[in-house]
Structure formats: structure tokens, C-alpha cells
Image (cartoon, rainbow, N blue to C red; front, top):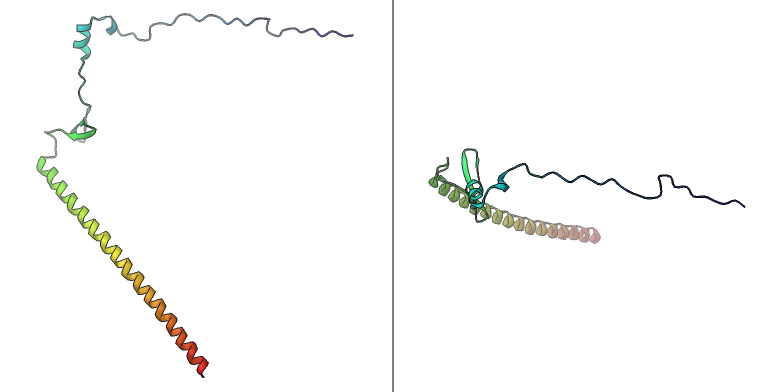
Length: 131
């Protein structure tokens, strides 16, 4: 009889090396400052997000980007653009209504045309039978 002997390939036990302790994640010394100095340096009130794009300053307030005064667009221009936008929306709605009306008229005319063609075919068939 043969006896099977198990020989471990890498040794009997698993013993990983211990990792060295981590260094501080931040190299900043702001955490060492006292509270009043931190408040002066960092501030508690960050304010609303703001950006400048195309020469226009924008500020994020109440979920919307609002143009700050002093930009290239005046209040009169904004009012004029809003009025023009409203006019264009009304014109667009009128044109949509006209398209719907024209489509209804086209459908009605097409249905009448098909009925007339059907009647014409019936008359022709009736005349052929009469001969």
C-alpha cells in the first residue's frame, strides 16, 4: 500500500506582513489653528455660488441662476426679450392651431373624395351592367 503525503506548497500558515501606519492625509496646518483664526481664514458664510460667463456675472439663488446687475444686459433688454419671447410663444400656438385646422380640412376633403370615387365606380359598374 502507498501512503499519500501532503506537502504544502507555500508553507503551513498564512502570515501577511503588517502594514506601516499611514502618514497624515493632509499636509495643511489649518487644523492646528484655533477656532477664531479658522473662522477668519475659512469663514462660516460661503455665500451663493457665482460665476462669470461671457462677461455676464451670474449668481445661484433659490435654485436658479440670476444675472447680477452691472452686466452687459440691461433690465430694459431683459424686459424686451421676455416680451418678444411671449409674442413668439403666442404666434407658435396660433400656427399650431392653424396646422391642426388645415389637417382636419384635408382629412375631410380626402374622405369626401374617396366617397365620390366610390360612387363614380358604382355608377360606371351599373352602366356596364345595363348595356
